[in-house]
Image (cartoon, rainbow, N blue to C red; front, top):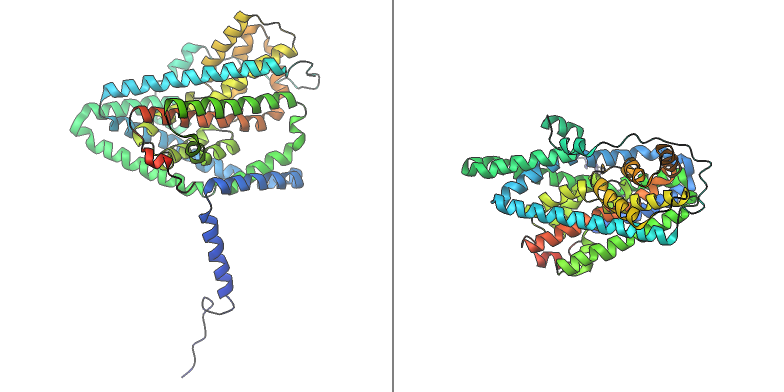
Length: 437
């Protein structure tokens, strides 16, 4: 009888390789996701510095990751808001929750604007700025407020989903949820479908997040390779202002919300939101970070879907603390660069205008630059001068955008935590646990 030939899988020579492979897989998935993303971010920066423009060849990896995340935003926002509203069970409670949420977002935006104005006034980043080499870039005429508010109501909900019009999607989703509530028992099957759909989409978010380290590596390598460490030289003072302002808003303002209003310890919060912060930082997009924010809110912070599904999608649209702070700083930068003297009344007008327009900024990279004209117009800066400022800032805006997206993300999650605490929709023991973080 002939002896069987060992298969490739059982050959002794292949056993060590399979053992090493299994060890690597176990090690990779044994490390918390935010640590993997952070490591990829640092490695991407180093590779970008060494590789230079050659890093453009891996841009597609980063773009693929961003597209995977953004693919889920519209359906996830619709299903999770509609399911969350339907789960509230009482239209009066829905109204109370909505008022609290919007009030909190307006308050934190106003604080962010104040921080931006104060920091930029103290550090004077625009004083003596040389705009001679800047190429003017027009940003178009800002939409009138009436048009912005009308656009919230979609003429075609399916079209709004296809175009990713977040405000219109939120409006329609809330109406669907209210309809389910009003239908009572007859609406229960629809509520169950919406809940199941949101759970399926959240599982997909978890699956896609496993590609985040590779996407973040590519995104950071491309930015660093194209612009290098000299990125901040021409806008060094403005960059310092953004870093200081973002740190104050993220650690002090949002920390005060979690500690003072939600009565919860800070360390579990900042550990728990790390995944969402890393994705927001690397993509420069609050919308791209939204699916991750919902996932960490429920799994790490113990926030119930009733709150996470309503507060976070709204926050990704109007909770723009970092954007508001940055627009305020750019306004001061412009006034200083063009020698515009501002009175106390001008400061107040800038603060009010910035708070309002920041809440309508699209949650996409460099979205804040396209509302700058509306604020600068208030202090008498001409459209031509605005185009010059945008042309000066735009080449260096991506790293600044990455930094200011961080407080956008922590704003949403801190407010969701506080409201969940007030509404008793948070598992405090789960929040305080250190599982997988």
